[in-house]
Image 1 (cartoon, rainbow, N blue to C red):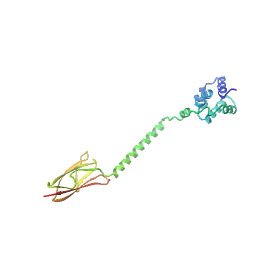
Image 2: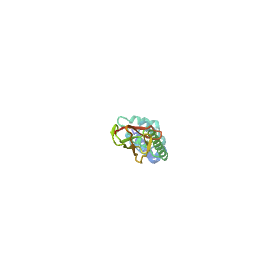
Image 3: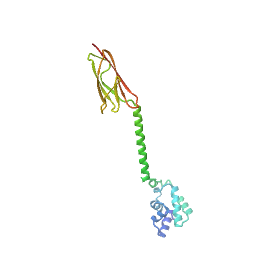
Image 4: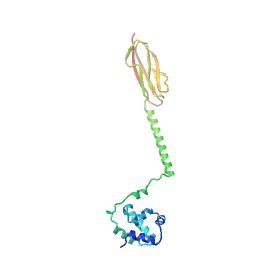
Length: 208
């Protein structure tokens, strides 16, 4: 008894039709048609797809699809022919079309914009960094002048006991402060627009 593959192949050749022609007319890949004619079931997708291919192929060649499908079901044993998904996966290959490219670019722009807003927002919420290098806290000195120096963020402003002092482009600042006799409380404050302030306090005692 002839098999499904043999009958289809013979009928096609009798009608002198190429696989490429049938592939174009039925919108079935030529490699799938070739696999059916070769009984290469493991190279084909799910049996449900294969039965659809066979039915269309039979109708195209003028064969009885019900009879041919009955032959196929009698011949085909899933245990002997484990399915390969390679051909099926090829049909789902991702193609980068202009519309998809535009969508990807749009998503990237949105992500970058949202990230920028997030970092700007968190920057506003965070107090500026403030490091006071001099003077050290809780010290006693006999020198009536002390140097206030340190570093903050470059876009922050710094004040010492309410008086603003310059901050260079790297965030460095310095100022000489005259001390009074006894205990001196020095407040160094760094501030940014709309952000909480950062305050460092130093206690210096001036002894006679």
